[in-house]
Length: 117
Image (cartoon, rainbow, N blue to C red; front, side):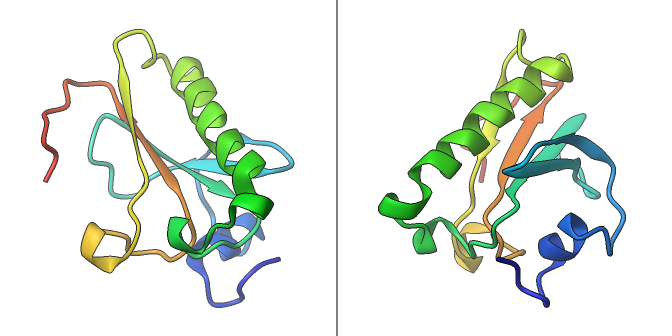
């Protein structure tokens, strides 16, 4: 299921170009156009889910787990896993979510401070 107004659904559909880092039948990962680290990839499900708040345990547990294990694979494939990487899911506008299609940020390639913001 997709949302015709959603930027990430349009990327999945091939209507908007993106530099693809990984894809399979459940998710797509692409390089962020405004990277916050030397490596910054977004991992999105092919199914439109607005945010983590809208995810359902009975429907989405397997998919959410797949997004995270895919993030780890991508970090390894891109060579940032050994030194460490960060995964982030922003939920809601006040938390920094700007595209309302759940996505996992994978950041690495430099030291990352804490707290982030």
